[in-house]
Image 1 (cartoon, rainbow, N blue to C red):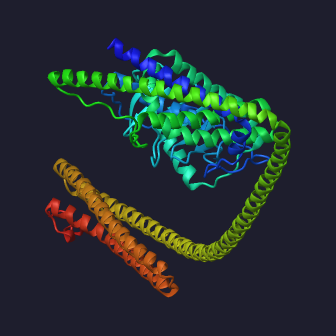
Image 2 (cartoon, rainbow, N blue to C red):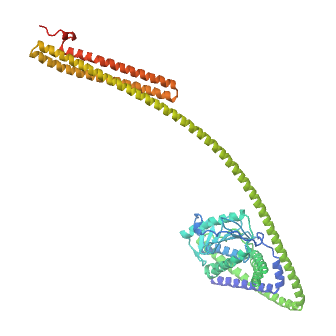
Image 3 (cartoon, one colour):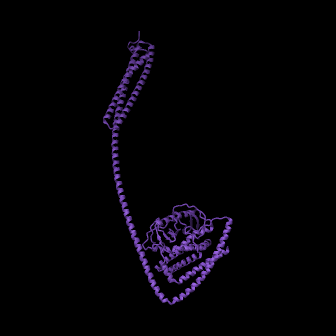
Length: 610
């Protein structure tokens, strides 16, 4: 195993030497290389940088302000594969290099930037309120991220689940509750950004804004890659699998570094342009050498490197032995190829030295050609600027057309809203008129009911007065009857006293007692009759009142007058009945007294028998 590791390191060292040699060889032919870089194709999704003032945009919300989204948490099958997500994102950062973003798009009040590679990979970055940045990484055709990184942590996703997290130093950590919560919120945000980048309009990134943020983004990338180099586990994974990924990104990195080179050439930043030119040449040399070294189809660009499946104990030993033998053989082949390549490079260096000696004799001619080439480059730069200006003018015209269309739509919408408001006003006026008519009808009905109640009250007062008169008449008749009875009793007593002795007086006293009892009974009977009469009168009055109310509800004066006459007739009949009862009461009392004495009423006048 130690031998295999040493062989792997030796092959890696040989690869590095070969790349450096190729870069040096290409650098000695700098004028031709520079011409090739100037002719490098621009990435398909790239829009020219804009000099127009950018709109005021808010930074992206912090993770605590994002919607909560619960993700399942899983683990990778092998601890070795924990760095596959960070490594894949690192290769994307390497591939896009120092090139400006391809475009910006609007989402949720902010304007994120996007790098969209011709190989299908995409990176989106958005600024944070504290001055940092948040990065989202997508694989070709994917709607969700495989990696998200903020200033503190990184999060690896696979099949919609969180499988690993990294601290700011690149160490893999097991996700706790807080990290799982933040990963879910970032996952939701990443999907929304991916959808917005596809559906929203794309804008050229503002040139001055890019110059402000470029050092910070470059520093983030350099610190991240430095953390990889300082992390033994991540570095070991990178040394093993990076050669398989670099051919995927070599052409993309060449185009991106060439784009950065042209940008810094235009900005008169010669030192930075020289570094980007060397990086572009190294990308081409390194990618070609890696492809020649492996000589086999590369894995698909979709998912991360496959995770080994679990096997049984016996098969694991055999598989480990086979893998060790294969790695040893591959290392030996790589070393042999490296030796062959070093010999080829030495030969190329000798040839280049000879060509350099010959080229020194043609220095003046080269200077003239270089001047012509420089003029051509300046002309091409002017042409590119003019093309970019025309593209910006066309974009402005399209924006004006869209603005006019939107203005027309807004005016049409305002007209519809005005028509709707007018219709609602007319409907409101109709409803107001209807409510006013209903209110007037209710007021008229209430007035009629009040008048009917007033008439009923007057009739009730008249009935009360009639009942009071009848009651007074009955009381007077009862008093007269009692006085007449008392006079009759007094006269009978005097006559009995003259004709009889003590027995007569006793009989008279007994008769007086019986008379008093009879008088009380008469009074009770009279009171009972009066109460019955009053109850009957009250019942008839209530009935008449109900009839009066019904009549009043129908608002018919004639029926009200008829009810009043019926009430008066009923009261007159009640008063007449009460008068008759009051007149008959003394006679009944006299009859009852006579019956109690055992004498006929006519015997009172004859006196005692001698």
